[in-house]
Image (tube, rainbow, N blue to C red; front, side, top):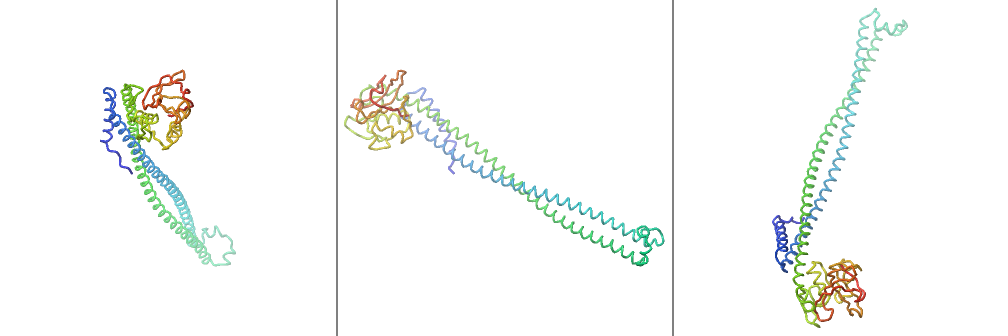
Length: 379
């Protein structure tokens, strides 16, 4: 993870931005002001990107935690279902045990009646009531009959006791299972609560990081506005130079005619291309370089625009580059200039260098762009 930018750096950028705003509104701008503003904007943009990267990393962590929460909840739901099923089984076994105990009471009562009837010899007891046939006494003796009934009842009671013991053992197993499930439920609930707390903290950190990113982006926008004001002030100062001569329009990369030196953007100094590249980079703060060394002539600038992600259009716009194709109306190399104004009659004002091959700068007003041949605008 990239280290977060320190608070004093944020404060410094904000103070710097305020100083620029103050300087633009009160003092004449200098090239150093412009350089400082551009450096501060780059630092703020880098800080904003760092916060965006940090926010993306935190969001990834939140996604992982959310998956853990969902998985834990799914396991917890399954555990709760198992607990409910186990409780149903325990309740059913409890009912079965109760039913067997009721049967056992009935059988014990029967046995008690048989024993009582034995001692009620000659009376109208249980034996006489159920078995009134005289042939029965002919088949077996009274003693044998009572013993038989007692044995049947005793066997039934033994069976009931065995079943009851089995049911009790099953119930005990289920109760042990229930205790284990309840312990698991408690562990899962505790873990879920823990990861939910982690998610809450990560969400708070994400919101704070996004807020810091927005502050940096706002600072970038403000610095861009300051850069525009400073650039406009500088350009206004430079426009006081005499037009039509070398060094006019505030352009500083001067060479005499027929001397060819490449500028920082890989165009020839004092040429139309060199001036247009300087204007976009230094005055407007845009990025424009020769992406095709050896093929950077003015007529080929629409291709350079495509290389660098700029639009090529037939619609004029202030600050745009106008590129004329190579023709007898311009030159074998074409020509470029900067649009300074757009008029309702279709004419434009341009600032340019080396139109008359003297390495000088000038302003052309109310120019019909088609008078110099086929053209296109870049912005």
